[in-house]
Length: 213
Image (cartoon, rainbow, N blue to C red):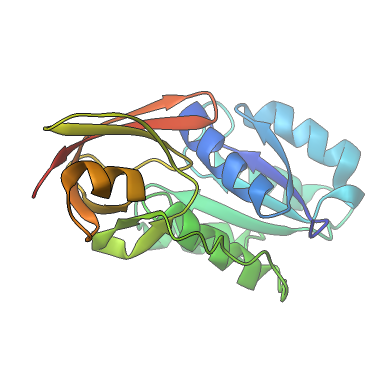
């Protein structure tokens, strides 16, 4: 555990589920809010115990910029760091967020693993958990992302279904290095597939793929 406390504010339940799950595995404690007004009251009450706030700029009612503006007007200067999430690379909006106290921004399109690494760098955490070195893995070829803890559900001559700890983009190309699947396909090489469907179930993600080989 790295002992860092994160407040995550975003109205997208799917996104917060994925990011919270990733950060918890990396040792953070995470409090999620889907309403920025509720989050603001929590921050005022618990500001001394918070290390990082991550807030989406596009929030209903109280937007991310309005949240930061109201927070800046508060008498007590916070000690925590603030990152903003943006679905688009709007430089004017990001610049406005920086002027209101944010010191980093992340694009929501960024891969979750990459985002976690940026958070470690931003928080100046030197020692963080090393990745699982399991021989079985899934590699997302387009962005060289590797997933170690996956679980095969079923497979046949056309498709393979598995649980993953992360969402994979539809139509993305992956390689599955599974001894069980390689034995079934009678090959010693990882299996090339294309993602057909991605369904979020609680803290798991159910992926269905079609073989390319």
